Amino acid sequence: MDINQALYLLHTLFAMLVAFLFFRYLYWGIVARQYYWKGRKKVTLSCLDQEKLPFFSILVPARDEALVIANTIEHLAQLNYPKDSYEVLVITDEKELRKSKNIPNQITTQSVVKQKIQEFKKRKNVPHLKHIVVPYDFDGRLGGVCLGREVPSTKARALNYGLAYINDKTDICSFYDAESRPEKDVLLYLAHRYLASGRKQKAWQGPVFQVRNYYQLRPINKVIALFQALSHEWYLPILMRDLPFLGGTNLHMEKNLLLKVGGYDPQALSEDLELGVRTYLESGEWPEYLPMVSTEQTPATYKAYFRQRLRWGSGHLQVYDKIRNATHYDESIRLLILKNLFWKGHGQWCFYQLMVIIPFIFLALTWMGQIDPVNFRFNLHAWLKIMAPIPFSFVFYLFYRFRNYIDFSLVPSGKSKYLPVLQMVIVPVVGFFMVLPFTCALILRALNKQPREWVKTPRTQEIKAKA
Image 1 (cartoon, rainbow, N blue to C red):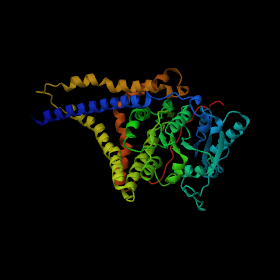
Image 2 (image 1 turned 45 degrees about the horizontal axis):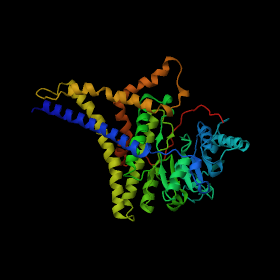
Image 3 (image 1 turned 120 degrees about the vertical axis):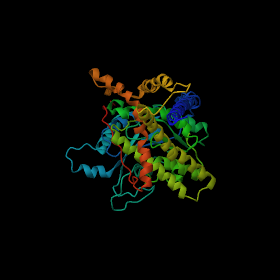
Image 4 (image 1 turned 90 degrees about the vertical axis):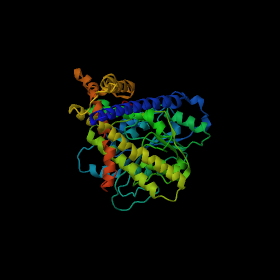
């Protein structure tokens, strides 16, 4: 066997590996559907013991969110749950007010929230809406103090401050981002799961479909958004069997547990994952996958996506290093978490980055005539012609699958309305750009140049919701 035939054999084996990974993903989808989604019970208020209903505090951190916060408040006010059994806390940042003083007629998040509070006072059947402003000098810790000097803003810092203002009778704290749209029955379903467990289950993480602003995304981001939604539906429940994963939104945790572990780490770049891992190590509590969807936005440009995912990847590595140095935890449990963090982070990112680079190498070698199928019974090229339509068909299937979560009021007029769908044909190159921020996080950490500050993700404008 010469070098050309050896390369052809490697090409064949790689194609078989890709097929295996694809069908494994389909298998995960079947498992997720069978064990999590198919058995999702339709819960009504009459199914629950009215006297034992848990009280929810929904916390929404909202710094520079004037574009979306009104719609979010309106949506949360319409959840199917007794209005006297939950409250909504919008947590804004004093720095936004200080900055807006220099900009005439600036619409701030604070002004929008204040307007909604005035509206709610005139309306019936709405939950209590609170507005919490984080001081510019708050140190960020749960029960922390003001330092008299400016402190960098982070999501964890805002949430720790907001926790001091939740209702005394709160049982469960729910966390949503400023542009979140959870399913209307989410609190009913959570109440059902909480009471069914005898109040023993204390944490839940639901999927987030970041496809709502699909028609405002660049082509690469469109495909990324669809695959991200699929991963939360099919892969996230599988991942949560190995890691006590918590996301920053559609997250729900019993108040007493949250206070017991000291709230969020204000220094963490990925405060949600850090909270999930630390909670398990300190209390043994493992989150349950919650098959109740919340829709959100995907960053509109690849630059914004890259910056967001780079922070997530760097935060994952930060959590790994923190647990590796935390020798006061039970050694066997700590090592198991470290192993899973490594394979779901470092190992997986490197593997998939190679997987999306290798096809381009084989393509170049084919053009150069370096891959010779002679003397091989298996005709790879014929097999590839059969398989080639699958990724294109699959991404169009994803658009159809998640169409109910897309905001079609943003569809452009005329013939251009078809362009956002046709742009999905770029799927062969998207894999490289999808995983690139995470491998860059590995490289930057190796060079000790990783991001060290929490960076906010910009939103896209939405059509104003009607009350």
